[in-house]
Image 1 (cartoon, rainbow, N blue to C red):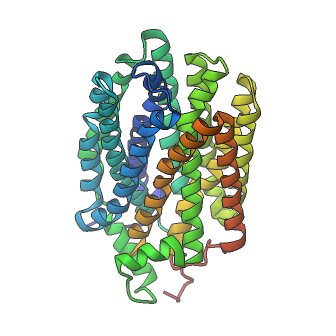
Image 2: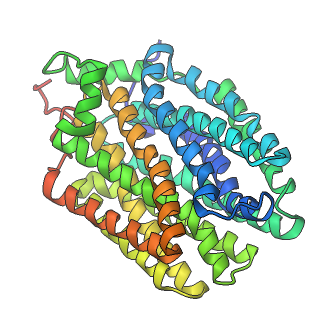
Image 3: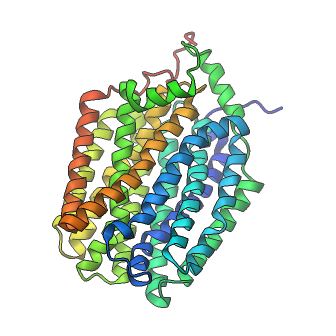
Length: 419
């Protein structure tokens, strides 16, 4: 029997396969980035911004709840089974979006998409953490999130160009059928279970210094009582709050500035593309310089990017703001996951990741609700300014409450002889 080894290089084939799988996962979200807000207004004639953004609320709530369950389910039934189940749930989504006769059908499709994303993206995160081991956790998360969000950008760009040439439906959603088929085939036929890598890492660390906490204890520790875990969690929540705003309001904001569908598609792609590519460097960078200040600074750069979009009036200004938002998000996103891995012991790490991702993706819903209410009451620019303020404040929480977690927590590499 081949001994289990930890590390990206040692598990390169499976790690690379999971990177490709997560690209298909991200592409499923990307196909909505350019299209659903215009579909809401032009096909279903929704006027209120809060109604337009309702699809993000549904997506965010279902994805958040499923994230919370995914960690527990993967511990109980195995990572691969949860990954395959997520792709099966995604299978009807592109067909529902092609044919939806009412907006409620779109909301139902987004509920399924949220469940699918919670199962598939959470599981690819957990499996890469399992394979990489403690020394390259930031790099592993950078590669994972690069694949997912670069695919979000590519899918958003492709669907925008298809919509400009053929209309909003159904042709752009044909891509979704390809994404589901590819992701499901790879997950079912080629991905291997990684639970044995968790056991190997647990043996490295020895038994936890304290009894394995209950699920309730993990929830409260990650949410509130552990200064490091809860600082990470609130930053993830606010990060996705501003992403939910960007997803829903940016296309409407750009359209109000007389951008056409091709331009909106390009602008919708710039932010996740920058985010995706930059994560190749920021995840690994956090393994060298630490997590705390990369997270705090990233939140502040995001705030500047949102303000840049709010103050701009043309394509160049919008693109500059989107690039800054992407860079700031890249500084934060893989680093937050790596910090969870630093602090949580392998015995309860998947559950802690699930709690973090519960709160993080509830940020989508919170961002859509907040942005919709403020935009309806005070206009689109006011919604952007409000979210920028919250994002800047989140960076202050990290700066004042969080301690550096790299090589300091129970997930760190133990010195020789100290296991």
